[in-house]
Image (tube, rainbow, N blue to C red):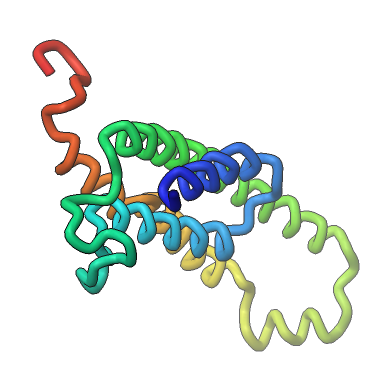
Length: 159
């Protein structure tokens, strides 16, 4: 029962995610949890520890082929969506910087900038980290789905 519900949660997330302003920290945190859950449910055991999940003892795997195909479709669609949403994040950040720069600086603001420099290097490091997070969205699930579905879904000629 938990697999269909989790797939529906992922579908709802993919539906609503683009309607909100990009916020990398909670978004990637949630996506990592979903990735762990899907990767664990594929084999019926925790993806990190290898312990059997409750209700899956003695079973060969957690998901049926139909659920795996549905999961694969959701995960691939979510990866594309995350790239689009997070690409909006840099433009969202630039708008905030422009609004901040348009305001008048106080003496404290100028003192802080001269003492600590600007936040540009911090932002570039944070942006790089988010780009890496984008690349790792559903990484465990994609790898395991590739292994489990190898040869059962044709993608091209002769597949």
